[in-house]
Structure formats: C-alpha cells, structure tokens
Amino acid sequence: MAAIPVPRFDVFYRHAELSRLLADYAAACPGLLRLESIGKSHEGRDIWLVVLTNPDTGADVDKPAFWVDGNIHAAELTASTACLYWLHQLVTGYEAGDAKVRQLLDTRTVYLCPRLNPDGAELALADRPRHIRSSTRPYPYAEEPVDGLTVEDVDGDGRILYMRVPDPHGPWKKHADEPRLMVAREPGEFGGEYYRLIPEGTLKHFDGVRISANRDVEGLDLNRNFPAYWRQEFEQIGAGPYPASEPEVRAMVDFLVRHPNVGAAVSFHTHSGVILRPMGTQSDDDMTPEDLWIYKRLSDLGARLTGYPAISTFHDFKYHPKEVITGTQDWVYEHLGALFWTVEIGPRTRKPASPTTSGSSGTATTRPRTT
Image (cartoon, rainbow, N blue to C red):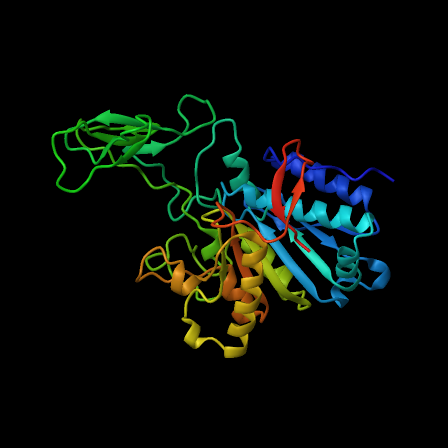
C-alpha cells in the first residue's frame, strides 16, 4: 500500500497537482477514502469530492454525513488549503488510532470538496493572474471593454499592484511613520502631499483626465447562484441567468439533493476571520427558536475552538445596511434542512481554546482541531 501523502501548507496547488495529491490519498487509503468527480467546471475541469468513512461499518449513504467545501471564490485559495488540512488530519488520525477520529469515521461520513471552483482558482494561480470573483465564464456580457482601465498583471511578475500618482485633489496620503503605506486623507485636510491610487492594468482610449476601472468580464458570483432566494442581476450582482445555472453550483446542488443523509455542512471562505451562521435573508426573530438555540450553542463552541467570533450573517455581516446577502447557507439550511456555517478564514480576534501544531508543511502553524 502506498504511503499517505503529506500536503504542503506553504503553497497553493494548481488543479493538476491537486488532482494528483487527492489520487495519492485514495491510493494510500482505499479502505477509508474514495475519490470521485461530482461534475465538470465551465472549462471542463473535474470537481473532485473525497468520501471519507469506514465502509466496513456501512455504506457512506447509510450514515449521517457532513459536507465540507472550499474555494467557491476564485482567489480564496486558503479555503482549499483548509480542506486539505481537514483531510490530512482525519486520514492520519484514523490510521494512528485516534479514538475521536475513529468514532467519527466509523459512524459518520465526511464529504469533502476542496475546490468547488477549479477554473477560478486556476486563473488566480496562473503565471499572469487576474482577480475575479468566481467563474471564468463571461457574464452578463461577453464583449471586452472598449475603453477604461482593465485591471491585470501587465509586467508578468505574478502580482497586480497599485501605483500612486501625485494629485493635489487626491484622496490618499503617505502614512506618517511608514511612507510606503497609504492612508485616507481626512475631510477638510489641505496643504499636504496627496495622491490617487491606480491599479495595475491596461488603459484604453484615455482622455487625459478620467481613469475608471472596468468591471471584470467574468461577472459571476457562484455563491449567489444557489436556488434559495435567488434574485436577478439588478438586485443581486453575479447571480447568473437563473438558479443553479452554473455547472459548479449545479454539481453541488445535485449531489446534496441526492444525499439526504447530509445533516450539517461547512463552507470555507477567506474574507474576514469569522464564523457565519444563517440566516442571510431574515432576522433571528424569524428563525425557528429551536434552530436558533442549537446554532448559537454550536457556533459558540466553534468560536472557542478557532478564536473567530461567531456571528449572524443577517445582523452582523452585511456589506450594506439595506443589502441582503444570500448564498449557500440559505439553500442548505432552509431547503435541505441541514445545519450550515460559513467559516471566513482570516485574522483571529483571540487565541483558540485548544490549538494543535502541525509542521507537515515545513513551517509550524497553529490550527484548531477539526474532529
């Protein structure tokens, strides 16, 4: 039997490398792990799913199950790394005889999708990357912009940076202690050295005065394409032409509908450093009280284990007070009846309760237990 692979946690895997790594896990643990593709992306890449359970104690579909996914947004690559960490902890823990891991995989199933959006991740990891929200499919229009600034890696160094241009009317100034850092100019502030910030990119038909950055041609947000509370483009940017129109979302939706044994789920993102709980479209007062109680209890446990605050999406995570955010959580909770959390990986506000140290990447990192 092949040795269990050790993933690196100091790099982000491209699709071919990730595919080989997952295949190596399947070869090393055929009695514990099964690898399958739940669909193809817009560009035809496999969307891999790892099925983790002990088949000797029953089939995966006959056990209560937990769904884990990451990297639905293109550049949120750390979400994929978090899924690989889960995978490695469970596999090595089971082989080492960890009682909690064995109890979990003997009686439950874990469905783990480390990269739900392989096309977007591949573009984010390209030699000349571009930042997009999700899918690489052009939407809502396929035409290239005829003028304006298109943000892209012009010099091919793998980075998209900003330049600062002196402008007496500019909204930015140098930080007093660190001149390389730009900070906002105060209202009513005059007499200083001010700048405009312009992203790296290609400018077409410049009129000598105004520079406006174009929206990405790839305007989809896969996390707005789920069936629950789907709204049209003018109300929810990036939602797509109709619910589950995108193959990546449809692959997840089809799988979960066909697996009613899934009772809870976690989706990894990298926006801020919080644990988000439903609902995204309605207040706590509109939730079933028993659901709200269990959500708060388990969310508080997650906060203690990770160091992330656990908050309500509706009450505490709106981009704008009048904006309602929907996505995976509302569909999984309200339509499938499963518990769901979004974990936004980012800076912690306090130390986790019971950290463990993993040095498998060659660099020591402190992470919470996942079992």
